[in-house]
Length: 405
Image (cartoon, rainbow, N blue to C red; front, side, top):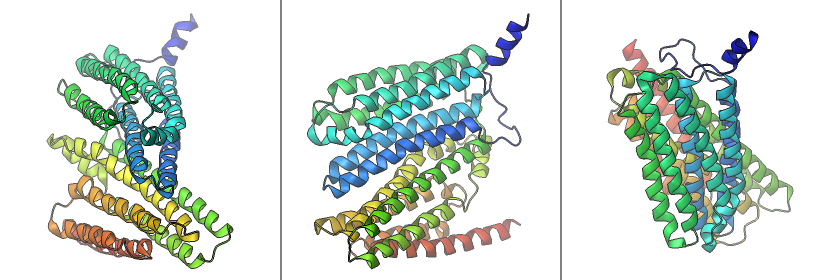
């Protein structure tokens, strides 16, 4: 007689969570999932780093953009589904673990992805296989939700159907990757298809995501990505210092600049509370969540690219070889920093303050950072500019709080 009760505890109905639940925080399973996803982020950044130093800038950047989309999109879909439906039963845990296994398979194929782009060969097998595994796990989750949530059944089924159809497209993409000319256009087409699925599915009814939970999930992932940036930079600096080099001062400049950049980016991102803006947008039905959710691709990809750039820069200044790499490695730092500043303002900080008083400092800082690219200590200049921006942003936030108070 105890078996049915035990089964009920192991497999509970996957019903919507309360979107106004107090004290909602990331679960241990979500934190574990983030750590596994960041393994793939680290692999993508490492491939970019080594591609830049090898003089294969174009293939390295293209491979990075493609790999990071697969990582980020799977993470985003998992996070928003969990915000709406996480019941932490055995079924949910097992299907989440399936998605984790998928991201680990994907991570194992990232290095060969760049090689495939460079040589025009079909080295996309592991990446596509890992991505499909992750998406299959999510399809099964949506089908569970469709069964147990009648009011949102149509939305859940649309998500499941849309994901399945696009995965068939990724299968066709893999078969076409031996033709190098088809890789970029097919990838772009499938990205548009992936992005269209949530818009189509949510037209049947909005899922019950939790604003504060989503804000925390995005903030935690940003911290983890910055942590990966620090790790990759530290390893590169260590390698540069331990070898025979006469350029220790230059390596030290990269180190100081990197520290200023990373901690300034952290400070700027958390200078405003994202949960407030998301809760207001959900209440007013302005659909800002799409801008916030999708726009973070640029924020996360740029943040991880900063780490790859700092690592490449540290190795180059410690052991300068090809003079051409001086400008390449410098741009590998300044360009993603500038992109990240603009994306952070457009996707996150602008939701709190749309005035030019808030926008001008970010645009000016991005312009100065880009202009510093030809300088020998561009990373140090970028760090100093970001430190000044932190001071300005802190002052603006304090002034806004005083007015509200």
